[in-house]
Figure 1 (cartoon, rainbow, N blue to C red):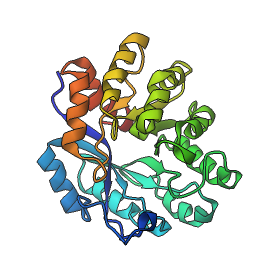
Figure 2: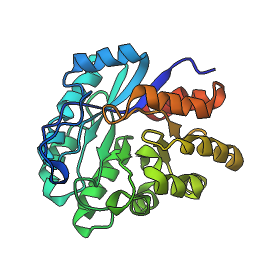
Figure 3: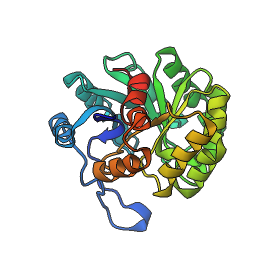
Figure 4: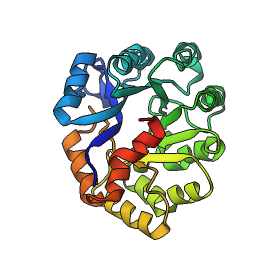
Length: 275
């Protein structure tokens, strides 16, 4: 029986207003926590026993995310229930910012490096090759996990992100957030690629934040059918972009309350990010 939950992916910090999609400046991360005290209080309210916290990101202002790395480290060093990841960028224009971020990789509490192509670049862009290689090889050298955003289409699509799994998954632990992202991503991962990668020896993991309702149920049925994958799925809220109540309810309904739920909500986190 599962006795609690550990959150493998959530964020800290408030982002500045930004005029997305041609509209007025907005600040959509209304539940974002700007301080460590607020962040810890939220864990207490939810009953979250352990969490991996990452800098908040999403606006096309490079320093907005990089400047939150110290806050994530502060959270990890303030409370032993918290571990953290550092924001790093695949873009060549962020090379100096990556220098500063990667220099923090050995700080106490750091367990991951987080990157995304939402703000530019792509896994197959030659201009990104050097920084991508730095990210993945640094993670392997320090036994860190690389968190990679997935979403349908463009540079974050599973078709693109899969190149990273193929190239680096033998030596580096890779956490693909959002179960591939959206309908097409779920179809690609659950429909075979996730399990094929696992059977090929790739160190690939995923979480179920942002999943469409059918996906966790199908995921569980495919795990039972293929006989692998039970140890690669993690519960995550992606707060403030996801919500604890919805994410927890959706995965709990699919996993039940037995050994599989214990893996998803607790044991897989402990294996990947430490006890």
